[in-house]
Length: 189
Image 1: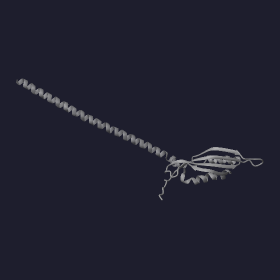
Image 2: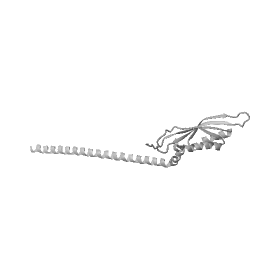
Image 3: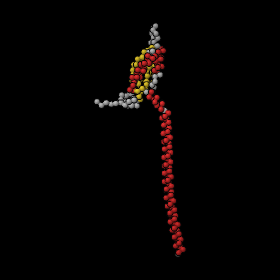
Image 4: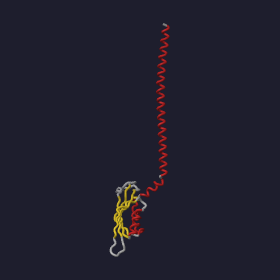
């Protein structure tokens, strides 16, 4: 029996070693899995940060290359607070062209009390009289205005009768982009 007792001890030792190896394997597998997961998260974080930096650099480049265009952007709008200068400019086109100019209506689609940044239009209806050359020059000057201007509904009428000098009547609409540049202030009285 001594002999079988030795086998039992050896068998128990083998089973114990096997459990120890299995437990060690399970522990190492878990530790390796956690390590791989942490490495994956770290890699994803690095990739995300690199993409963010690349996007930030791209946006910085766009910002730098469009600086002049952005500075020029406001020149396409007439400040809603400064529509008088636009009206004066349109009236001065008459003198520049040699035509008689009358503004028969002026309106805007920007509501009163609009917030800063609101974009709309100023509409001006122009009636003019003069020679063919002067009314054509007026139309050309209106189309060349520095703001984002649209000229539409052009109508030309020969107003000459009898032996008079040839005179022409012209009417057209001017539409200019307008921007509210200051916040509306509400007074509580």
